[in-house]
Image (cartoon, rainbow, N blue to C red; front, top):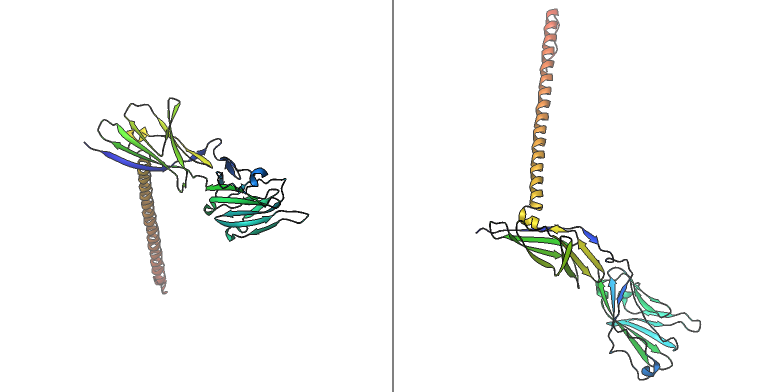
Length: 316
């Protein structure tokens, strides 16, 4: 029993779902936010090390802010921002003296600023290397204790249009076939989820995962499929395709289009060749005919001059 298989890969233009791609400077997901604790707890030197870090989501090449909360009823000696190592030290403004900021990590030089009045960390032009843990240590002057606020920054990029691959296998002669639909995104990065949505008679059904397997036989109702790829900062949906069309016509749509294009190109090439040959023959004929006419005229003129006793013109 013959088995036919084919793999087609297409780039499907994407559409933006309402509420999907958002124009945002930053987006934050909160998990048990560590706040500045009352002084009754701070007196024991509590640093907040046991608290879950605040999850912060940033977009590649855009900006993000790590919000810092400080006790306004206490005088702050300084704030130490760090990520793997000390990033910057901030001495807040006091008694008319401006704030003193010293950036100690050269990787952030020129890309960070500190937003008053709490001196929250603002990072511009985010890179993949900016992902990771951050800490803000607030040192108080009067109580001689510190509070710690922790963050976990994750950087993502907007997803590009999905690639859709259709694999189908026709195991028999009756025309039924097995279909595999594969959705992927170039340079997708982390935390990308794929969902296939099938549409039949106006009803939709969702199938989680990058690969969807289906079965089709002649006479089945037309089912359209779309792929949705999403990460924490973008949500991209492809245009619908009808997978059954690949089984009904194994050349659909790429091979058919490719064959038509090849035939058209060959036809144009043949026409161009014949046109070039025709122009060449016409040019040669015109040149030859003109030369013959000139030679005949020269011969007649020479004969006339000979009759009069004068030397005739040269034929060269």
